Image 1 (cartoon, protein in one colour):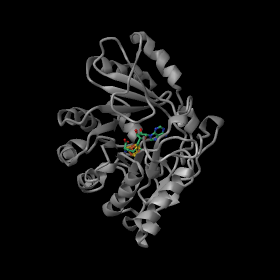
Image 2: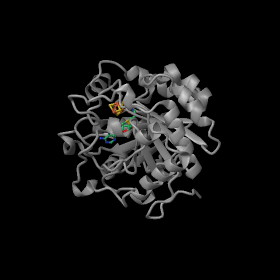
Image 3: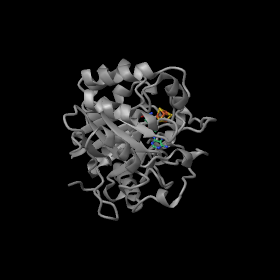
Length: 328
Ligand code: SAM
Ligand code: SF4
C-alpha cells in the first residue's frame, strides 16, 4: 500500500508527466483549430527538474510513471529521461502515451532505457479520415507500423486508444474490435471529453453503452482482468480473441472513486485532477532551490487538493488549459 493518500482515502501511486505541450498532430478532439500558444523552452521543466520531482514523489509512494504530452516523442532525448527515471529504485513501471508517429524511430532506445509499455492513440484506419481527425497530411502508416514495432521490441502490452466521435469515426468501432479478434490489439474506446478550447465539443459524444451495443453483433463480451495497468478502463474479450477491448468512460460513468493519479504539466504545475483547473506550482520553487522536504510538502498539498470527482456529467466545462498542456 502506498504511503500517499488523498482526503478521500484514495491511495495515490501514479504520476503522469507531460514532457512537452508541443505536438506533430492537431487532433480535432484535443486541439483548437487555431492551435494553442506554445510554451517557451525556459517555461518547460528540464529533465533534471522532472527527475527531482519524480524522486520526491517516489519517496512519498509514487511507483508508476507515464510520460505523455503534447506528443512526448517530439521532445529530444526522451530515452535519456526514461533512463534517469529508471534509476529510481521504487519506480517499477514506466510507460508512454504517444500518437505513434515517431515511435518506430525511437522504440529500441526507449526499451533499452527501461520503458515497459506503451499506449498508442489511433482513431481511424482510413487514410483520408486520419488526415481529417489529425489535421495532418501524413502519418497513418507510421502509426500502424509503430504498433507492430513496439510489440516486436518487447513493449507489452501495446494498447490502442480510440476516441469515439459521432459522425466522425463511430462507424469504425467494429473494425477496431475486429482487430482484437484477429491480432493482439488491446483497443480502448474512450468517451470524448469536452475539454478546454473546443467549441463544438458536445456534438461528438458517444457513450460507452452505445459503443458496447454496437459491438454485440460480433459476439458476447466476456469481462477480463486488465493485465498490466493502473488505469480507469474496464476490459472485455470476445471468445477466442487474441486481444481485448476496453472502455474508458470519463463522462457517462466516472471512475473518480478509484483515481490514483497526479499530473505534472510540462511547465511544472502539479495537477491533482485532469478535469479540474487547480494546480500547485513546482517550477518556481524548484528554480529557487527548494529542499527535498519542501518539495514533498508541495506534492502532499496537491494530493490534499484532489477533488472527490469531476463535474463533466453536470455540464461543467474546463476553462483553463487545453489537453496538450495538461497531458491527457
Ligand atoms: N500525443 C499523445 C497521444 O495522442 O497519445 C499523448 C497526449 S494525448 C493528450 C493523450 C490521450 O488523450 C490520447 O489518447 C488522446 O486520444 C486523449 N485525448 C485527447 N483529447 C481528448 C478528449 N477531448 N477526449 C478524450 N480523450 C482525449
Ligand atoms: Fe497531439 Fe495527442 Fe493531442 Fe493528438 S491527442 S493533438 S497527438 S497531443
